[in-house]
Length: 123
Image 1 (tube, rainbow, N blue to C red):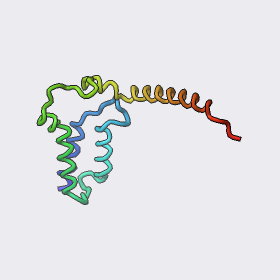
Image 2: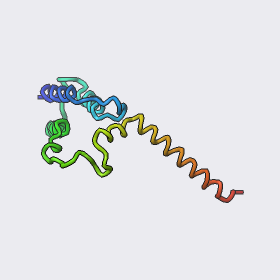
Image 3: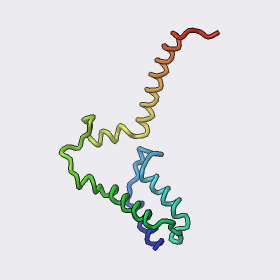
Image 4: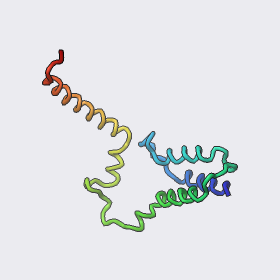
């Protein structure tokens, strides 16, 4: 039975896309790493808790197939920001997030420098 579980997880990993724009933060890459870690001996791996393993697999399949997105249709593909899904994808790429953090850091540094200048000097 462990061999069947292993093959099902491998098939899921093959089908799951990897988003290269989110290197280091991509769910597909994380999933591949966790499957490799959990099934170190491949088909010969002994699964400690088969029920939990099967439940995890079924949950991942529901995420991968957009089960809940399809079951609970939305009127618009927007969110509270008013941006489309594609615009959100562009914003959360690793490169864009790095740029945002650099801007945020520089703004905080500026605020800190102004605040620090007003602090009384310690003796």
